[in-house]
Amino acid sequence: MNANLASIMPQVIAVWCEEAGHDVTFVVYTGFEDLATALPANTDVLFIGAFSESAQLSYAISNMYRQRGTVTVLGGPHARCYPEDATRYFDYVLGFTDKSLIVDVLNDHAQHRPVGVMVASAKQPSALPGVRARWKFVAETLAKAPTIKIVPMLASIGCPYTCSFCIDSTVDYHAFEVDEMRQDLRFLQQVMPKPRVAWHDPNFGVRFDETLSAIEDAVQPGAVQFISESSLSLLGEDRLPRLRKNGFMAILPGVESWFALGNKAKTGKHVGLEKVKQVSDHLNAVMRYIPYVQANFVLGLDSDEGPEPFELTKRFLDMTPGVFPGYSLMSAFGRAAPLNLELQRAGRVLPFPHHFLNNNSAMNVKPKNYSWTDFYSRVVDLTRYSFSWRSVGRRFKHTRGAIPKWMNVVRAVSSEGHGRTKYYTHVRHLLDTDLTVRRYFDGETDTLPAFFTNRIKSDLGPFWDHLPEGALKHDANAYLHAEQSSTAPVAIATPGRARTPKASA
Ligand code: B12
Ligand code: SF4
Picture (cartoon, rainbow, N blue to C red):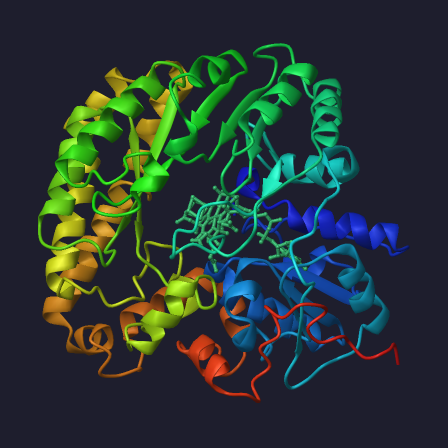
C-alpha cells in the first residue's frame, strides 16, 4: 500500500498498546518489507489492519505468525465486512474498536482456534488519539512515502446521509472535539515545513463552519494544504472561497449515479441530462477555487439501465473537462451495508475471493439491468473514453497548477487509467472465450477460473505458500445466513461488548 494512503487506526492501536504498557513494533507493509523478519521473533500479539483486497495476504501473514505461537487480531474494513470468514484465520476479529476493547484483548491474549472470536465495542469511539499522540507512528509511515508526504487526520466519524450501498449509512455522524484538531494542526506546523493533510472523514465538513473556524484559528491561510472527501451538497458556492483561502487543494465528491442519490449531489429530483448539467455547472464552479477535483461514480447500480448512464458520463466529461473521474464497479462488501442483505437474498452476490474486492478487479454483484457482456463492453468504452489522449489533453489544459496537471496525466496512463481499460478489455474477452469465466460470472459454478487464481498467486508472491487451506473461498451470503440463524454469532451490531474474551489464562 502506498504509505500516503495508510490508515489512521493501526497508528491508534499502537498508541493504545503503548499506553497499556506494552512494547510495540509498528510496521507499515508497502509490499517491500520482509515480514518474516520485520517483527520481533517473540511477538505475543500481532494486530493486522486490512481492507478486503488484502484479506488473503492478511490470512497468509496470520498463518505464518500463528505457527510461531503468536496470537493474531484482525481489524479494519475486512474485519467489519467479513467477520465470520476472518475468524477462520485469526484468534480475534474486531469490529468497532475502542481503547477498552484493545485492553481486553491484550489481557486475554489467548489462542482461539480453530475458530476465533468476534468482538466489537457498541459504537464508534467518540475520540481518538490525534496527530501529536500518533506522531511517532505517522513519521515512521511517512518515511516510506516518496517526495510528497500526506498526514492522515479525522475530524468526524459516520455520516448523516443514508446511501444504502455505503458502510456509513447506518453509522451516526459524530464530530470530534475541534480543540484537539486545532492543537494537532499547530503541532504539525512545528514538525513539518509545509504540511499536507488528508481528512479521512467519510464526509468532511458536515459541520462546515465549526470545522473551518478551527482550521482558521490554528493555520495561517495556505500554510497547510488539505485534501478531503465531501458530498456535493456540502460544497455550496458560498463556501468555496473559504475553502480556497484555507488551502484546500483537492476535493473528491461522490456523484455516484445520474439516476439516483440526488440528495447527496444537491440535485434533488433532477435525473439524467438535467442532473448532468447541474453537477457539471457545480463542479466547474468548484474548479475555479480548488485545483484538483475527482468525481466518483459507481457503475452498475440498480437505478441504471441501458446505454444512457454511460453516455451521460461521457457527456459530463466533455462538459467538465478538468475533473478526474473515479469509477467503482458496484460491490457488496459483506456486512458493510443494508443493501447487501437484499442482494444476498436475491442471489445476486458472487463469491469472488476478497482479493478482487477493491471496486475494480471484480464486480461481485450481478447487475440488475445488464448482461455481463453488455456491462463490461460499456465499462471498457467509458474508461477508454475517459483516459483517451483527447480527454487527458483536455484535462491537462483545464486544470490549474503543475502538480494537479501532472497527477492527472500520471493517473491516466498508470494502472488506474490505461491499466484498468486493458484489464476490463481482457475480462470482456474472457467472457466470450472462456466458458469457466462465463459460468462463474453467471453463478453456475463456484470453481474459480484459472485466470483469477493465477492472478492471486502472482500478487501474493512468496505469501502464496502460507495461504491456509480453503482461504480462497468464503460464504458470499454469510451476512444473510447469520441473520437467518439464531445460533450464528451475530456479534458486531449488538449493543454492549458483543462477546467478551475470557479472563486471562
Ligand atoms: C478514508 C477512506 C479511504 C482513504 C484512506 C484509506 C485508509 N487506508 O484508511 C483512501 C481515499 C486512501 C481510501 C482508499 C480506498 N478505499 Co476507502 N475508505 C475510506 C473511508 C471513507 C473511511 C475509513 C476511515 O478511516 N474511517 C474512520 C475509522 C476510524 O473508522 P473505521 O474505518 O470504521 O474503523 C473502525 C474499525 O474498523 C476499527 N479498525 C479500523 N482499522 C483497524 C485496524 C486494527 C488493527 C484494528 C484492531 C481495528 C481497526 O476501528 C475503527 C474504530 O471503530 C471508508 C468508508 C467508511 N465510511 O468507513 C472507505 C472504505 C474503507 N474504503 C473502501 C475501499 C474499497 C477503498 C479502495 C479499495 C477504493 C479503490 N478502489 O481505490 C481504496 C483502497 C485503499 C488501500 N488499500 O489503502 C471500502 C472498504 C471495503 C472493504 N471491505 O475492503 C470502504 C469501507 C468504503 C466502501 N466502499 O464501503 N479509502
Ligand atoms: S454521503 Fe458518502 S459517506 Fe455518507 S452515506 Fe452517502 S456514500 Fe456514505
